[in-house]
Length: 269
Image 1 (cartoon, rainbow, N blue to C red):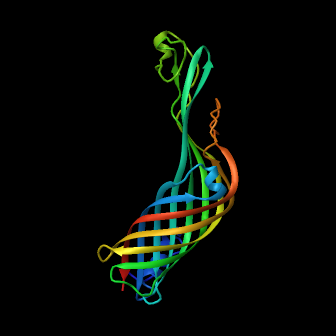
Image 2 (image 1 turned 90 degrees about the vertical axis):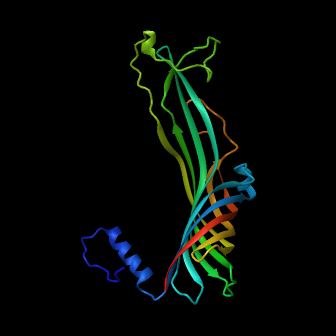
């Protein structure tokens, strides 16, 4: 690739940023190394946080990107993103309007996402296959709640058992000679909660070489999230016509994470 930064203030900012970034990465030094990580991750919450979300553990995915500018000092700089859903609930909302029963199903999900900056120190004594490292971690935790709804539909006591529930079928009012002006609600997604807090931590990991560019990667890390608000997953009380069926609580959010996956390295010498 060319090592010239093309001029032109009319270029879009994102294109200019990409050109500068790639020049720094691959043209500013005689050596550069980029590693991409993809891991499965398990989280063990502690203290009030663990009690509130009613979980011994929860699971998700982790994606990381690391840059090593110098071959001799064994330091890498990186970013990691975690996505960790920890609870969900489903319920139906039933209304009676214009002599018609209207049903709509909802599913609420709550979870935790993190974005961390990483300073990674590789152990200087590199073994032939196993490569230990230590991480210093600083970043942000995000807690969220999302509700997705299905299309609403008309329902009646089609099995004649005296109640309207999930055993009854959907009806078309026109087939029964019923005229209605009701417009049924359509599917939608609603972010009904969001909070962000800082987090710091330390980690220790191992990379085990599979072949030259591909490594098996595993790491354990303790991360302390500062006090924030989030959904208590054990508090669902389904209330008709409401999608906010999780109690919001507040506490620090300490977690031990264990990640396991693969790392692929692109290197320029």
